Length: 351
Image (cartoon, rainbow, N blue to C red; front, side):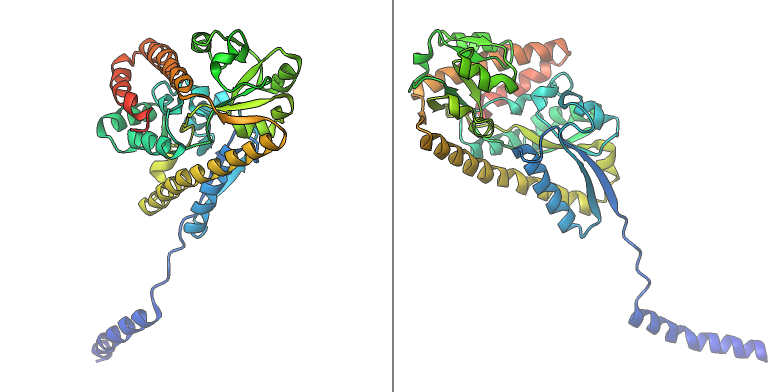
């Protein structure tokens, strides 16, 4: 009799318990928090570090704290050239760097880092289309990334490359016989097109070299010339009509694959927004630099288009079609390089 009573009461209690659970709700599962480690070779006040902070702030805000970042700057964890190795090994989860500085690892993926002959906005659009949208090129870039255990997000831009000169000039032809800083061995041939001599000088020595006449000009971003006060020992700054996409955010692939899909979506959206934000930021900072130069008495203007186009064609020939292709061939990636090069010949002009 008691057994039947207990069974009957249990049956009667089932709907009551169900209603109670509906009204009060099931206990919520505490969402997993991802604390990610970020490394940056730049100073916090440099544009690439500011892009990274903008991106990470967006992700932290939009995930309501489910993703947080432990941030390290100024080569605190590794030299600039060691950042891909640092990331691939899983020692950090996220970095930002200049791909051509780590070109021995990013043999193919350094391509969008080369200068482009178009606006900053067109540069970003072309680079991200090449790496994210065109199936044939996207697959090539992603295969190299997979082999390195990394995932490259959208590219940002730090602004144009100009030439700052210690004499007042209005064209590149006036620099015949003058000295300019050397970034890579191919610069000897590139600047040789204008009768100039490319000489190796550390960035930290630019100011003194210009002041003493060891350099007559520097091929350098205007924001960098402002930050290092190079305009104090110069009389002109020539725009070269060059844009570029130079600093992508890069994830460790294992970390990326461990993240839930909704967080991955937030990260990709934040990365794309940061890429677009970098265009506005760099445009404003470039104009601010120009105004400081003008106030200091410098001539500020674009070099003649025949000069800038000649320079860019030399950059394409020696930097990309010879030096980069040669490095790809040496790495056994010659076929992939030729596919990318066909697309790059349009992308480099913002097409």
